[in-house]
Length: 402
Image (cartoon, rainbow, N blue to C red; front, side, top):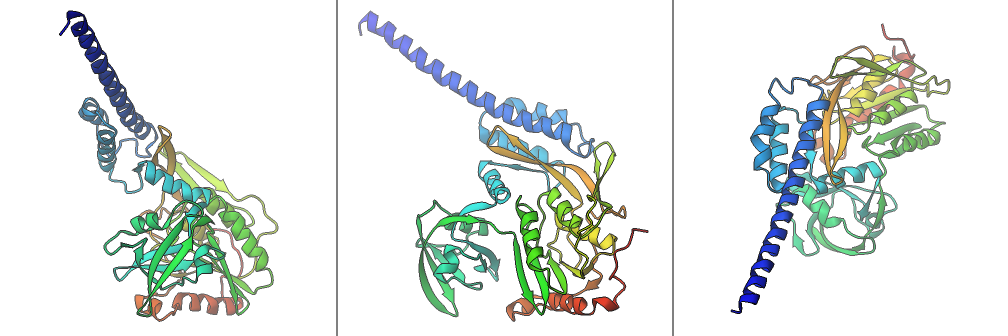
């Protein structure tokens, strides 16, 4: 090879190697920054200043220099979070963070069904009003067997949900099992506005179901349901299976039923307690109120039901709630990842710490799998009975906390 070309070849090789090396350094640096940012957020924000009684610096010393890729950073972050022994502090990868934001922004793109695993089968448990799914004829109880010719047997619920969602106006083919008959549906996806509140009026009683407190629109939806319920004898707030969401939502909705007072107290990592008070409200709802809770009612659901119970403003029916008395803050990391950090605990108006304890209902009523399969709801039946007999009960008047 000509000496001149040999030199050029060497220079080009060196340049290419340098570019690769620089890209590697930049990529590694970004991955390290991802870890360091998360490590620092936890150190300064986590509600337990002892960080579960451990030397937090040791994690930086252990992992930082060995992190070369984003996946390395993910593994390291998951490891340090696991050491806190806190199920509510979580690192969210981009896909998970996007999922969480979908709920907050109250919209997604799909067909409008709620699915759950029942007896090992992916089952439609709810069909949203005025959605492609409803217009196509899908019904609660339908079992999904295939999505776009993909057999979903063994798929996790989240994975099935991803298959069902898709761009606006794209089509989805679903195979459904209903009453032992197989039905094929071809449905066009649309933008779905997530409704977290559902109203059903029967026997002059308003049954208002709040499925989540995650949407920013939830208080407005509750307010709309209450306006439509003005002529009813009483209200049933159904918080069963509601795992929580945004703290302000619970506070705003509690204020709709309370004229004043402390709704919840937040205790931070320094032991400082801050009471969140109801705004003075002379137009609060005074009519009979029953709240349905179960072991799936958590966080913001417990803030709402705890306040209404402590002020004797509502009767609680069902099963003991989950017992999540901790508050999380959502941090965005490098624009695409999320970090949900436990930053405080909360107390009900009476000063009760319900974390890992839950809230006991005034009337314990079971709701079994057999009840569900037979389309029976003994908890709702009890709530309706209490509304009808409300005038005879000692809960009828709002009282101050002793």
